[in-house]
Length: 525
Image (cartoon, rainbow, N blue to C red; front, side, top):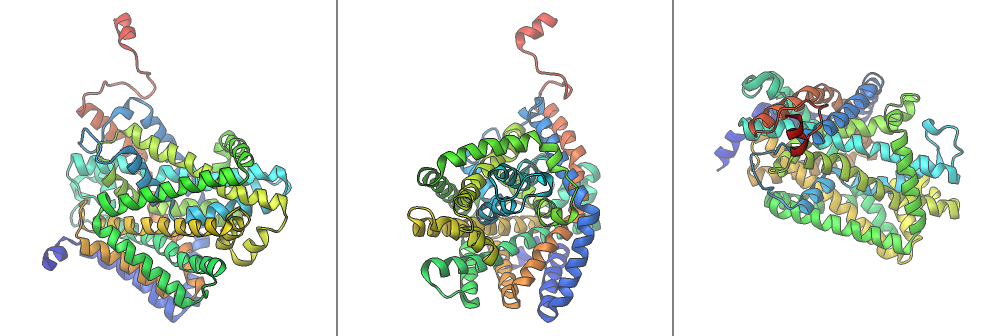
C-alpha cells in the first residue's frame, strides 16, 4: 500500500511546496528578523504593484460568473451527473463552513468595530464612533467578505476544472485550470504545471496554517477569560494538537461523513446563535443596520471594490483579504469541484457568489452590529478590550454584555473551533487531491497534511506570534502568481460553458439574446 501511495504522489510538487514551507519555518526559527524583513519587503512590493490587480481579477470573476450563471449557460450541468451527490443544504453548508473558516467568527466581531471606531478612507467625511458611522463600517466589512471574495473561491475556476476533469479526464489539480489553453501538455512532465500546483498548495497551506495558529492564541484567550484557564504557550499547543487530531480524523472519513457532518453542525450552531442574539440582543438595530448597510454596499459596489485612494489602509484590509481569498482560489476550485457534481452553473454561481455572501453579510451584522450597538450605548465597553487584546477580545467583550453571556461566549468559542476544524480537514483533503489528481486520495495522506499544518502552526507559536503574522502577510505575496492563473478563467470559463452547452444540446444563443418562450418562437416563425 505504501508503494502505491508513493507512486500516486506528484513528487516534484510535493518536494517544492513542502520544501519551501519547511524552509520558511526553519529560517524563521533560526532568524525571525530575516523572515520578517523578507516578508515586509515582498509584502510592500506586492501590495503596491499587484493590489489593483487583485481587485480587478476578483471584480472580473464576479461579473463574468453572473453573466454565465444567469444566461442560457446557467442550464449547463456540471460533472456528468444528472442528480447532485449532496443535498442542497449539506452542499451549501460545506461551502460556507470551509470558506468562511474561523476568520468569519473573530473578524465578524472585530472588523466592523475597527471601521466604526476609525472610519475607512472611502467614508472620510463621516465622523468616527457616531451613529452615522455604523452603515459605512458594516458596508466596508461587506466589501472584504462579500460578493467578490466568494466569487473567486468557487465559480469560474470550478467550472473550468469540472469540465476538464469530469468531461476530459484531466487530473483534479490546479494546473488543470490551464487545460483549455494547453491541453494535455500541461498535465504530464510540465514545468509550468509543477509551478502552478506547488504555489497553489503553498498559498492555501499558508492561508490555513495562519488561522490554526491564531486559533491557539484566540482560544487560549477565550478559555482564560471564560474559565480562568492559564493563557500559556502549553495551552495554545494543546488546543492546536486537539484541533488537528480531530481534523485528521474528519479528513480521513471523507466528504460524505466527517466533513459533511461537521459542516452541518457548524451551520446549525451559527443559525442558533443568530436567532438567540436577535431575540436577546438588539434585534431591531441589527435588522435596520443590515438593510441600510447592504443598500450602501450595493449602491457603491463598483467604487468601493475598486477604491485605490489609500494604499496603506488597503494593504491592511481590502487588498489583504482579497489576496488571501485569491490565494485560496485554485485549491478551492479543486474542492468545490469535488462536491458539486450534478449541479448546474446557475446553482453553483447562486450558491457561491450570491447566497453565501448575503448570509455572510448578515452574520457580520449580527455579531459586529451587536458590538457597535454596545459601543454606542456604552463607549469603551468593547473598544477597550479590542485595542488591548485584539480580535478575540472583541468577541468575548460582546458576548459578556449579552444575557447568558457565559453561555454565548462558550458557544462562540465552539463555533470558532469547529469552523477552523472544518477548513483544516477540507484543505487536508484538497491538498491531497492536488498531489494525486483524483477525488479520493489515500486516507494516510489526508491525515499527513492535517498533521503537517498543525505541526507548522505549533512551531510558529513557539517562535512567537510575530511569525504567524509574517506567515499571513506572506499570503499576499504568494497570491501574485495566482493572479495570472485565475485571470485565464475570464476566457476559459465561457469557452468550456459553450462546449458543454453544445454537448448537452442547449440552444445556441448569444449572451445578449434573451430566451424566448415556445409561443414567441412560433410567432417569430
